[in-house]
Length: 425
Ligand code: HAM
Image (cartoon, rainbow, N blue to C red; front, side, top):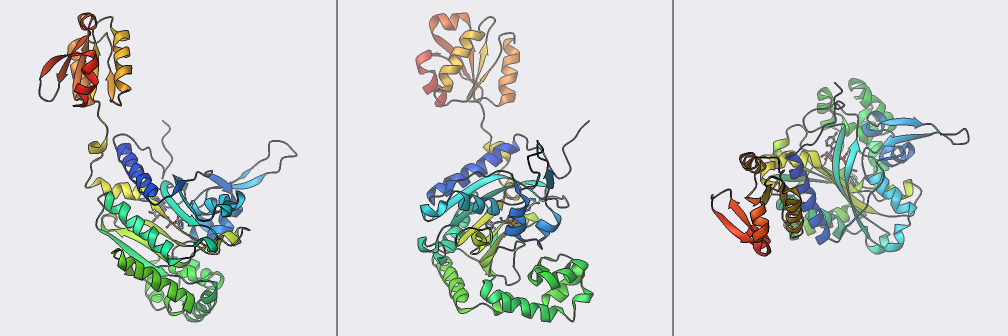
């Protein structure tokens, strides 16, 4: 028996109804903020993530699914390819490749699977899904404005509220820019020098190559040391500080609550200035439902024009998990409005009636004329149909059909022309 690969899973009905519910709500909210959909490939050149996300990050150094794609002919060069561990690098690559800068400010969203070779556990998978949104464009189009940061965060609060997830917590930080990062890295290196040999191997390496990444460390023994390290908040330059204050001021105006967390650096190297995560109590250790931030230098790092941007990715698996407590999947799964039960020899007429009713947007389950009526009733009840509609020779002749409400037991004869209206109730 061949089973699904560890860390991957099948999403089955009725749970998929909840996934659709979440995605439909997200698309609705995106429409209200004038975001457009973008779809990028699930695999890209490995170099995109090495340069975009950063060689020293856990994602790139440990978690990517990478393979050498052989050429099909001798003239065809092989290349290193990677299943996308996140969406932002691919979207910025597409932004550069298709000169989306010419359109001014781009507000893009993307829903799809991402892949990371992490240790699987509840809320953490090797194939997981993100609902990702990005605002990116030339600074002249306003992409650098704190108004965009606040708008994106307010949009997230709106989406979570709309889904009925109320007990979220927005953690906010500014991780500064290239300007202040140099000083901060220097201060971190100095602070790490006397203590790093007491830290884990990863941290000893990070202390040399990319000290900021020490904050990603999850080794319990290292935490008391990390607690004593300097914070980026003490090193923000004037422009970064003003930007961060402006973001907070707008959030207060639009009444989106947040807490400042100056340990929050996020596990990807492209971040500048605003960085954030939304957590949710119900999720335990994997409590970040979503994360994101600004990445003002990413386009240039990938060989593109300056294009400040900000975005987020919701972990859809985790969002659905938080929802499940309050909204059972069954409650959002569409049920048949009617089950059509054809009597012997009536499959054709039943199909004709089903076709007509489905054109009225009704959900119709179509039975089979070999079923005894009793079996059709059982099938209709199992499907959760509201009505059963009987199609026999007499009904077709009279052009009126027996329609029984399976909830109340009431049965009436309804002319063909009135059926859709009657079923719609
Ligand atoms: P990230 O924090 O790496 O950010 O991932 C965003 C969210 O994806 C997490 O908060 C979590 O809910 C979910 N997630 C991550 N890994 C897993 C996993 N193994 N299993 C289940 N869920 C997971 C990014 O990916 C950035 N690209 C976000 C962004 C967009 N920043 C700017 N624009």
